[in-house]
Image (cartoon, rainbow, N blue to C red; front, side):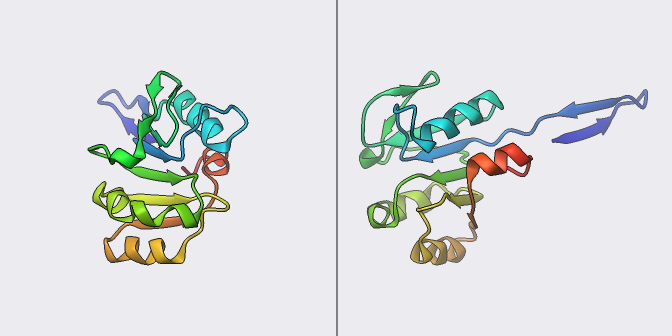
Length: 137
């Protein structure tokens, strides 16, 4: 959130949104990736869902991660695929040059954290949903 005073000393509040790539996106409403897409969208964050199954979430087509689509201006990558499924995507994820990668519970991966650090990418072991709910996303 950005708070500014205008020339009349009136407070103006601007919500800062973060373009977020959701890795492991799903149309299954019981999946945390789906719930994160819903919550991010409701808070006006642009989402780019990437997964292996076709579908659409909140007006956005799930892009096939195996095709490694070209994306720009990604602020955050939030992971919903386990560490054993991540290695084929290391180079791709790093090439997106995000500001940070969030490792949601069950996705923790020391090797990818080290690669991210070598590329000056912040890593967070946390839960996107919790971060959003307490305002520190």
